[in-house]
Length: 229
Image 1 (cartoon, rainbow, N blue to C red):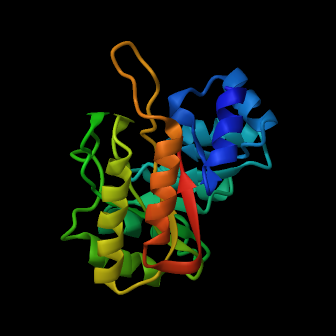
Image 2: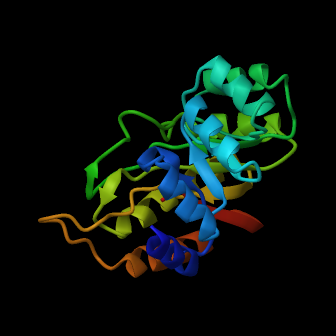
Image 3: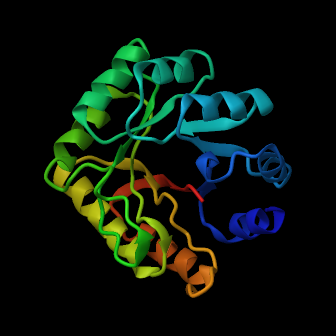
């Protein structure tokens, strides 16, 4: 875990939010924290409580696009989480209602993207469609006085670096069509491991593809790049 964290910190050109759902074991979280990974992607109320209790100074982002009202409320008021993902207007309204109409939220609109080359695609489960995305992006942009961004997930065990480029191009088209400026681009997870019969390209190829694609996007000059490995 330490070796993987050190490699990712040295090669990913942005902020790393460890996806707690991948492995919430205490020894994994401790190894990451000691390696300097202090930001976490939580997908449930239980994960938020686990990380915030263990590391009170951690920065958490609630990146599951569908959440219960109780989970949103506890995340905001009990654990100080201000970053929330969403993929529908209903979810946006729910977030705004359960945070008391907070204006200092970071809202991340999750987009549906192609998952070519992924062993386990997630597009059919989550993400605003290309038709829905522009209006949702405009709503999210208007709802916060802080940062707003786009996120996606290319699917688990993605075997093709080019899939990230295609996803970032999809996100860029949605941003341009919406006529807004994004502050954050979150490329999600999906980074592959070596399994029997599955030998992905070098991880450096993924990093280079993401970096080059980010430079071509219509985003704020000081826009942030995130990942959820």
